[in-house]
Length: 186
Image (cartoon, rainbow, N blue to C red; front, side, top):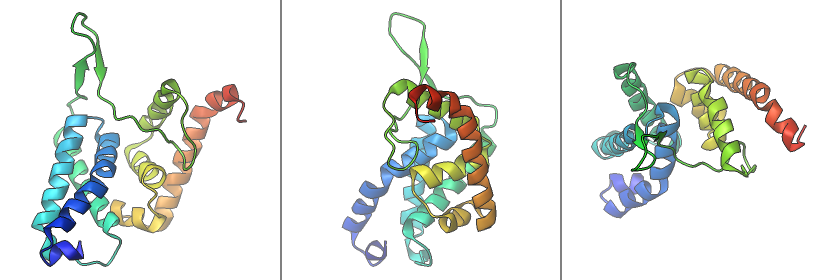
């Protein structure tokens, strides 16, 4: 970002390549709508270009980006409280629809999810979490942010982040216990 700030446009390309997918996954997991998530990513990078002169490297760059994405997602959720996810026709010949989804092959660090059914089960368990808990667990487990970075993104104390993540993990453990027992991991 510092390179881009002094005029190196190739640095912006590198930022975009490096952070587009994490921003898209983050926004999609929060908004549950692929089109909205793409819009959020566009807005995030617009803010990066518009605010380049105001950027001060006090925290990690990724923390700054996730904070921007968080704020944009919250604004969208406030504006669209009664709008549902975008669905697409599954097949031209039938009237069945399916929700747009971004495949994500991991739930916890270094643990690969082996089947699409398990991935859907885990996604549904995460979706049942309260919004702020879901956001904290997504930032921690999917984007590997530290507790301090998450506290900056969510504008709360580190202790609150620890409590949110602990409670989210406990709820997920309870919801996923049958799956873990079936797989022989308990």
